[in-house]
Amino acid sequence: MACIAIVSRVVSASCILAIATLGDAHADPLDAATSSWHEKTSVDAEPAFESWIGVEGYRHVTSLYSGITWSPFSNLRQDGLRLRLVSGISTYRYAGWRYDPALGANSWQQFSGSARFLDLMAGWQFSHQGTTVKAFIGYEQQSHLIAPFDPDTLIQGGASGIKGALEIWQNWTPTLWSSLDVSMARAHATYDVKLRTGWRTDANWSFGPEISVVGHSESSLQRAGLFGRYENLEHEFTISAGVSAARGNTPSGYGAAQYLRRF
Image (cartoon, rainbow, N blue to C red; front, side, top):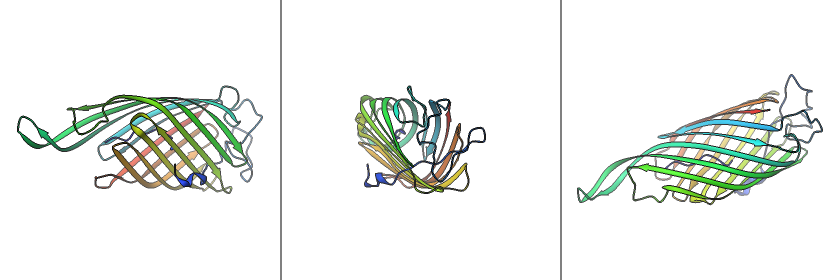
């Protein structure tokens, strides 16, 4: 089954957190030893918006998502209120044995599905030295459609409810950082946890491992892989790949890419 990508993301590891220090040739350079993109600043001309679009796929599942975050009373480096809108769609295929009334016996059937979601959330950003925490609460609407109708799953039709998300970022040293994103939604008990640790090779490039767990009340998917990220004060591009394993399925590869822009 498809696992909705969102959540940015509850494990005891939530203290291993992170974000990378950003640099840009068109802005005053930051001191990499003491500063990071998410630290407070009094430069009001800096961006108040960030938007992103991403795609990911594994086995018979493809997902596309996009979102925007707005800091209405400060820029993105400063603490304060955050408003967020995220939406996405997934398409997937799967098969299984189901009872066929016409045959009076079980038969192997193919299913095609699609899932859509929309998040409306508000939150607050807290920063201290190299640590940044963002906490969000809001509402999520989901819609699932499977053809033909599958009597063995309850993950069909519409569902909605409260959603919470926590994003923690930590610069351990000028070259080592970690990030942890956790989200949970009431709709179909959806959850998403992602942990990354990156090593900065220069002011713009980072590489490292990532692990994640995503799922809902009827399915769980685990991933382990590697990522690479390029970033400056305006743009960020991340690509990752590795191995994914869903409950009851043979492990397969996965790939993901995301572009983010601040303005």
